[in-house]
Image 1 (tube, rainbow, N blue to C red):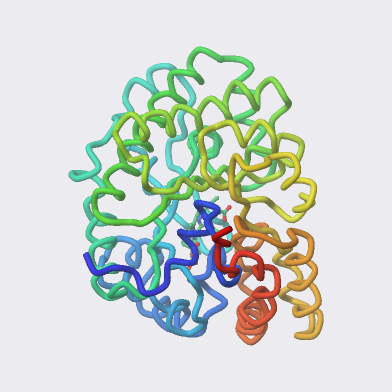
Image 2: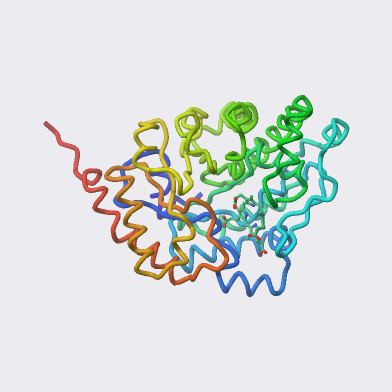
Length: 361
Ligand code: CP3
């Protein structure tokens, strides 16, 4: 494969020196982009995900229009529950809906651990189509939902509210919940491994709903699920591909999350980057963590807030600029451009020491 023209993101994942801080944004391909909306007029969301050429097209839009330092494959975390045997719909305004949610041991027994080449081949095709069109400009990030977040959707049946069905379920039927968690973790690990074999340069796990759990359940479900996936990936020899972990609402668990084997922790906007950096030491790199709401403010505020995040991490390597969650649909594209430009222009001063030649004496 062609060597990468821009490997700032991968270097930052490994905490290697870079001349500036790399930036990409969660949900950088999506409804705030007019070019995405134009495609959505012609195709529904799942058709975009399932048609490799279209998924590649959408993945490239932010790379070409915003000049971000990494591409993230256009897909969704719910492709895995679907491949396991559930029927998933994404409805406008309502979000994801699952037809027959998982509620019993028999429901869990019916789920399969899919062979990704068979059931998720369209995602692997999208990886290959995207890599071809990227021609080594920036790295491509693959992803999957973390086991707990997927379990929450699979049991709840929708993504609205506080997932109370799912949270009652893990208390009432812990054994069934563990069997489900284990199946999901295997499915996710096999899927990520297949994405890596198809050529993605890094993978991110999304644990969007980890913050709903009390400390014991967090350890029992969210942490256990993530650890299982990472262990399986490492056992399969995927050591040289960075693993990023986005865990939302879990500022209290930063130190614990740094021990999961992930290479990068992606933090939400409630975390203090300076404090997190002290907590994790040199165990992991950090990604984040601008509040996506800041992108709805005037351009001057966007610049100020971007500077604040850079200053909060401070000098040195191991920071990937990102949001604390995904770009909101009502975000002005101009503000996103302003953010990317600000990070590129203002971050070199935090990497001055990184640029110095090693001394020979
Ligand atoms: O980051 C990217 O640009 C890559 C694409 C991506 C999507 N979803 C596209 C998408 C990624 C990485 C995801 C992950 C995802 N999906 C998560 C974890 C991250 C997060 O945002 O918390 C979750 C929880 C989902 C489940 C999901 N999919 C929800 C809740 C929704 C509806 C919300 C909404 O914005 O409408 C989706 C649909 C979805 N996934 C859209 C996109 C662009 C909107 C579909 C559309 O109407 O065009």
